[in-house]
Length: 229
Image (cartoon, rainbow, N blue to C red; front, side):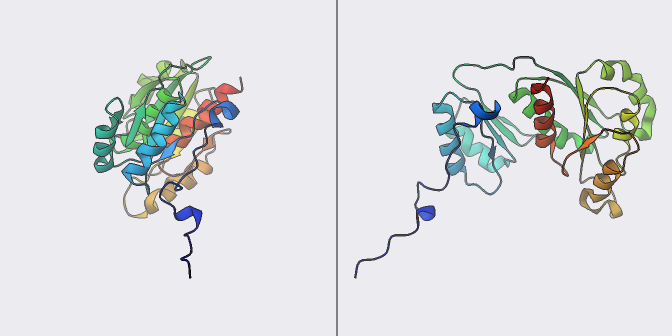
């Protein structure tokens, strides 16, 4: 009796179906989520995208996988703090109207999430600017940079603990503001849930809130807002 072939999903070359049409539908190539994938799988997907003249962004990539990617794709760049890997397209494509986006991080512990947003914004063709360590525990640091912050087209505000910074800035600026809760804090911060609920319940109206530690999602949200204007 002939042996049964394994289902297609289990064939070595059938682990992913790369969406090469996404850039034409929504203006952005498919992004590779690195966690849970092996380095060879990520390399294969990246090469397929690059062969179609699409830029490559891999998110949530640990240092071990990054070393393997760098050996396989020397032209790529690993952004260690953001845990991201980028590989430029063969023919550079720029955003039709790059936005100046201020990334406001409450404290140093929030930098990894803020850097994920920074790298993603650059990948999407925008001009991010860092406003770091301006949390409300030292409100004078926020106020000192307020005019610079107001000069941006949009803001991404990253905060843990009680996450008050988006509410403060939400009452001081008119730009679109996307808030990112982080899993930073003591005891009852509940892995970022306290910050998340604080942002959702902000008294400053019109704040957009993304998931915990999701700097990538915040940058993508800003890009979508910019594309519709």
